[in-house]
Image (cartoon, helix red, strand yellow):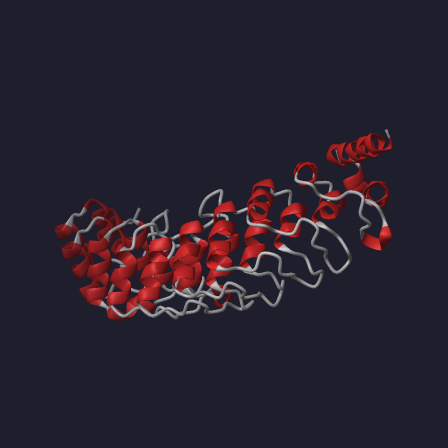
Length: 345
């Protein structure tokens, strides 16, 4: 470690002053990728930080990992450090990291609104666009940060703003895997209360928020969306699948239960005439198949190309070895055979 880095890490102001008088390099990194100024701010030694800045230290310098000084202060939960840096140089609020993201994107992913409010109060752009043209509101929704979503909306963020795929924050919340095992219920509630479009579709997938939540198995979000007025049986994507179909495709039994509780059509058909149970068969999803069957799914009805469930299951098993070789698919076929024998008896 260079002498100046060491002095700053220890908070030795006079030693640092002497080294700087001898033209010590203010930008040399230690093995962890931090400059002397990073160390001073991290340790809240602001007298030392002022000295370094007065001697030419770059307040916009990045760590080896690509983060800015302000981001580093936020990551370390140092509101004093963040305020010091902004007071010293207001433009660092909009200084992007190596990945092109300004500090408000980091603040939008936390579980505390302190830094988000601080940045907005100091003039941070809440409409900034980051990777994939996503906004801070998209990032807050993706991270399950309901309080952050509320703050951004209160400060003027657009509830239905779109990313590069035209996805809305509600779509992010619906398919989010970070909020909880049941998805991003609290975030979805905030967005819906502020008027988010329940039927917004992503042009690349044509899936509504309800379809995304069903596909991901987010039971809590499904409930919030339906209570908010989402259309439960509308067709999605080019295949014309409903939310129930997508839950069956992905073996999301909790989602199936929730959709049926709200009256989803068990026999709704896709463009290719699949019902939910045919989708469970097609994908070898035994749990979804058994649940749908127990809830009264019709296995005496013709499906794709006019086939009944049992011959259709056998055809799928033969045509798609990766599915036919699954023990779950064998169990589905066995169950269908037993059901047929039961009817014959």
